[in-house]
Length: 324
Image 1 (cartoon, rainbow, N blue to C red):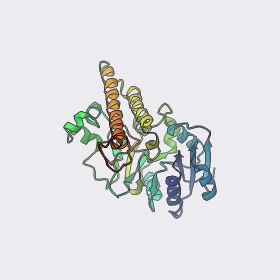
Image 2: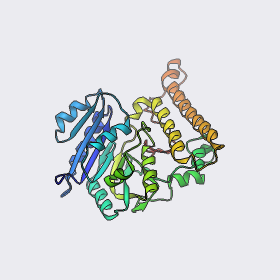
Image 3: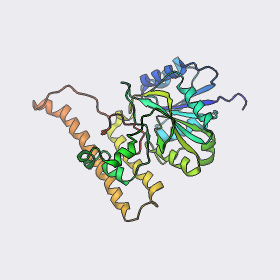
Image 4: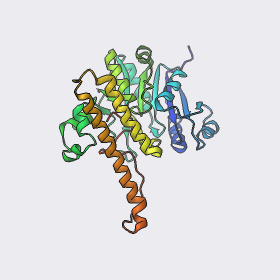
């Protein structure tokens, strides 16, 4: 259509009303000259007044309301199907879009027609860098990333390679994959390879999409001029244990789908067991943390101000839409 916008922004929300409000205020307040943008919010059956807030305060936003929580990936696909832009920005609701970030992403895409996916520069609320551009995970990263071995050998080369610790996030660069918290996707790519794989209810769908892009001949780029603050995990923190289970299920699915033929079959049960052990460790840390802040003080054994808990990670700048 001749009146189609250049850019469609798709945001999936679930019970993050205040974060979404701040995100939309930043997004609609950028006022980037000459850039036609449509904003689509897909709400996954929120119960915190999100839908009413969007209708009342952001009537220019196209709102799609799901009657059930369909998961992050399927809800994104619903938004993509309803979008019209040449480019689609998949954006988390716990983000704040800085001035000219949208223009920087689109300009980068226009300058690199062979790039199917472009990732933004994500910052923590304190201004520090989130390692949102990474190499594809391998068995070495699986053994040392967020595991007992990783704690014994924190400077191991496997995790350094996976996290691209030598990358300064200050140049346009080809990378294996970028975080889906702020991922610009060329519609032409989706027409070629299809939408997000809905077998990933949440997590690892961004790694999988980037993998498929590279397999089809499209590049994945990182754009340093598109700056977006990402608060990380505001929806997943509400259901921490289910999120951890879903995260590890997605890791296993990604391996079966994309890596199964790259490694000897004998490694299949070992990798599955490794993922299960890693999940068990994460759940144990959650249990011990909750025991420490809820039970022990009542027994007079421990007293400390309670603090919020996010998905346990070794790296505090971790993106919640990640491979490992």
